[in-house]
Length: 467
Image (cartoon, rainbow, N blue to C red; front, side, top):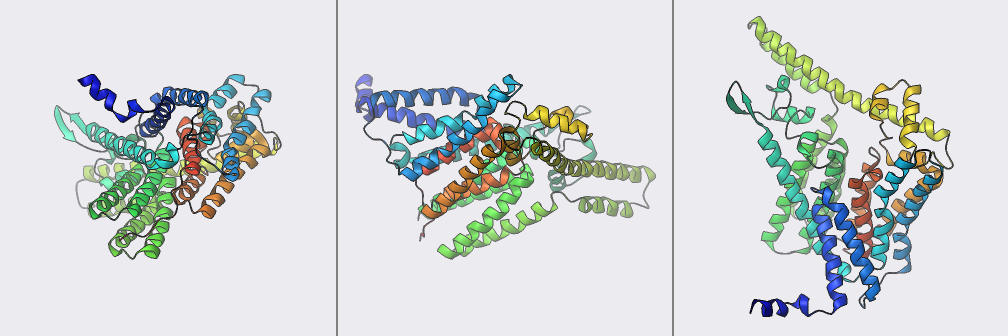
């Protein structure tokens, strides 16, 4: 009887080619679900996804997605970018590093080709994939919060206490000060357990766009409330991550969504909510790198306790020193980025046309760090921390032009076709790669390659009015 029930399921009654279509689509959904919190599973998922695609081609599926010539050519721009970068293998001295780079960026070549020949499930049921991505990020955020909460329980002198601070010197500071200084278990790298905070903040900004799109597609008040709650939740997580690029992205994203909300429907409650988050986001973005605020607070405490015992004053002075040190570290990191960019520009001047090859980028940067006496960069073998600089250094002017073509044409296409999620995706990604070389890591490459290709095939257009 159980076997009969199984056989009666629609999936098992489908033709073979349709079963393969659903398997291929399901693997894509699993990829998006796990990308934010289990990247170890991504390589086998990608391999299975590619194999299912090959089987699809063999079976010559009857329900292929119809794409225009413009869409096909646009889908080929990541392939062009990959090839312009991969050709550096032939003139790179470090063949091992070059081969690893090609492996990392291979999805830029494979994913667009899969979507060019994709089955029509991606166009019909693309919302399922967006939902999978949102669900995965909800789970990753909850895991991060629970991990931070668990790590905040500490044993001191045989007593278990709850203390969110990472460094004892900041124990007496407020929670928000700890977040601002990135010394809390609930901030920056201590919170983001699965990837660099900048990457995670970029993911979450994309999730907010998707949730707003979902919010605009329904008239059910309960469902709308769920989506608004999700937007607020992810806003809170981005705030905790304390990634400057993520916060600035969020600020301009919410400005854009507020304008759209006012133009579509004057939903004053939601506009008020956005206004609040915009104001708070602006404050956070502007105060992230400032030194004076927290120092002034501690100095005020010193004045208040001048009449107290010397040991109390000494303790506060110690806290002031610690905060000064932490702020100096934050400022040093900011200044270091300009040093790194300067070193990258110096290297680019000597290799404008073809670059140094995708395997020699870090070695070339290290040579410039030596020339500029930047020991931290040399010790950590830092890349340019800017995708445009990294691309031109490794692949030369042709590689940079292919990157600009991919992003520029993609954005213009999204505006012309009014594909709202695609527009925001390109804008968010383009801004974030100004401060990180995101197309040199699996977290950035897999994310970009999939969404760039998928959002051309799937066509969620403008945010629409709802009651």
